[in-house]
Length: 313
Length: 326
Image (cartoon, rainbow over all chains, first blue to last red; front, side):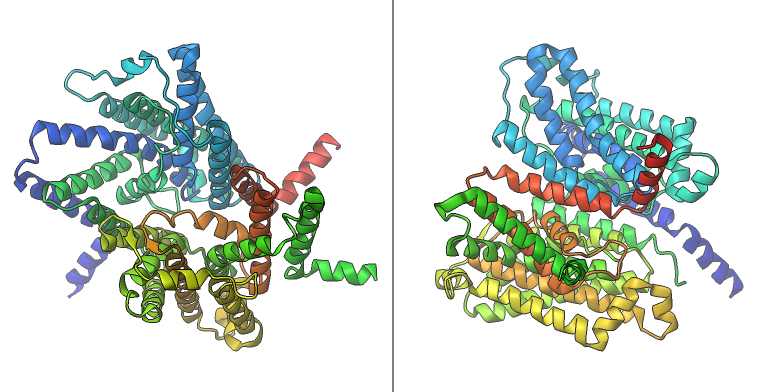
């Protein structure tokens, strides 16, 4: 009897990762048994599209880890960055790239400063930024897309040998992001601030600086996705990033990063992104429409959040 | 006289209405004698927007009053709209009731999960937002469903007494009921107690879990009424079209004096906040400002309240003043 209770207790302690492992293995087995899944074209197209969301999700991981739940404006700022990138292409590719990254980093960094410095509510500030970006974009572009007549962006569509370009960028983003979190003082500060901002302050860290730089990092990773999306569709359009904030936070949470912050990693987000992509690919191959994907992602996110229960107090 | 006026303006329920009067006067002066702002047409427009944003803002505001946050309103709104349109063909009232039941059940499920597993409302309702949004995609098969009863669509939005409509009258009725419940019933007092100080509420014997679940059920049902009537009025239900309600809803609620730290705000104040936002939107359109101004105004409101309501504003302002001797 006692052994059963200790066993149950051990599951309770690490139930989330156990269930996630079981789910991942199950899905992979199911995938391999699905006819046509391992064909190169289906996997390639899946990996390309998932990488765009993946880069944004890496950025969102920084926000979630720093204790600020999620950003509602990250999809809109990604769209706005595609517009800025395409509009500034007349200056040449390199200046346009620099502008795009600076723009996206600043856009998110300002939100991070407000959230960190004043301890303003991250949901409200990111909703405000969302409204501002949408309004500003309609003012500047008149709600239409930007289609420049250059093919300078073709460079960004190059593949790395057999690996699709966006996937390579996503994997590099994951490595860079994880290295920042694991091996730098900034990364450790993010965990500390996300776990307990007061303790971080007592330990001599200024939480607002960490929060602001976490948002800047989120902006930079989002810009990677923006540039790749703009190059792929050869346009800058506010439609590109619609819903990315929800897809990104889904990937972060499904990977097992805690919604209250301080616990998780970029590698977990990678796992979450691929898990969702695998489910989507399977549903398509088994003949289900996109509506089934939306429903299933919602249910998975709900289930993963329920796994984070803290027990009765 | 001024003292009484000041005391009146300090009342968080009166303040949004004072702001509303101020905005109306300013817009009226800008408009001059052209009569575009102070017209029955604009009033009807404002009330139509009130009917769209109002129920969502009320549901969200009630959840903020108990120091929680119901992110799922966007998903419930779409889901309720789809349910109403798909089941209300023969009997629209029955369709609306079904939609309300679905909304209430959505709130019940989320509230129960939250209290049972002791989870944060933001996490659970984020999952709820994605699930209910996904469910409406699933129900409609990712298409827009047309509502064949055009008579109902017209009746819902037809002007009543020039400025009202069935939709806006319903929203006003909901706010009045909510105001009565919060101010005059035991449930209302318990709700405010839970929002002000949850521990103290537990100590005095309030069943906090029950209050929280009830708030989320009410929030779901209110949002469902709004979503159902909105879809009837549009004569269509689509899983995507209704997604942009969370941001204006939150803006209206905090304009109405609801605080993210809980315990503050009243339904009538939220109604005032919704009217301010609607007046800004309709009034600016009436005087010919292009539609992007809606978004900028909403952003301004959210930024202002987000910063003014922040935890460390006073400390930061104090330190800036004393360190830099401003």
